[in-house]
Image 1 (spheres, rainbow, N blue to C red):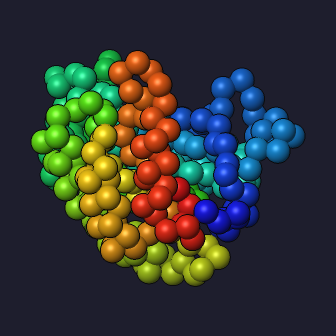
Image 2 (cartoon, rainbow, N blue to C red):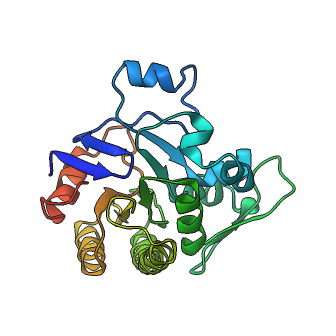
Image 3 (cartoon, rainbow, N blue to C red):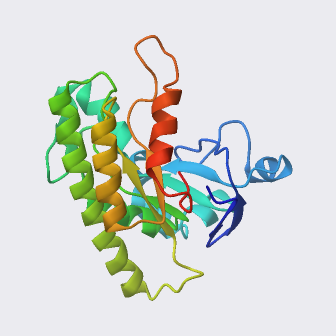
Length: 241
């Protein structure tokens, strides 16, 4: 794995801990607090941000960096895990298809539509340094048929994200220094064969970084360290995971 990663808002050292600022705020601290303890980057979430404070508000305020006062890199999760949490556990909230997802958050009367293209559009409009492809998340114990569908859909969505990312980068005229990185997510559940298949197909498309996808704990709540290590082995060492 590389020791450093250059992003539009600065260079970060790897491996890296990312505090969770889901809706643009790391709870109980501000940007100055994070800088004082030498946090290099934070993680925010496109799924939650599109609902609150909302995309129009974020863009009106000049993007996530200006809105939050954070000057260092921001990673934005695509919303794939949140769709898993919301829709796979409460089918009345919406539905996932090959096109994307339509959902109504709990307590809301508004329906939201999240596709691979929309996820990339949101993240780039927010000014993310690391854009993450929308993926179809599963639990490690889901049936093999579900894992196979997840891999097929995740790869197809990653291809669509790649095309939309490249289109927007060209449209905005983003050069090497201003262009965010694009991360794809390796799914496959507990199946090493499916993990390998997913990784190989994503590598063929080509991304700047790769992530471990899916629920990372077994039924007893233990971290799946062997599966995490195996997924790392599938990705060439020059790429972050």
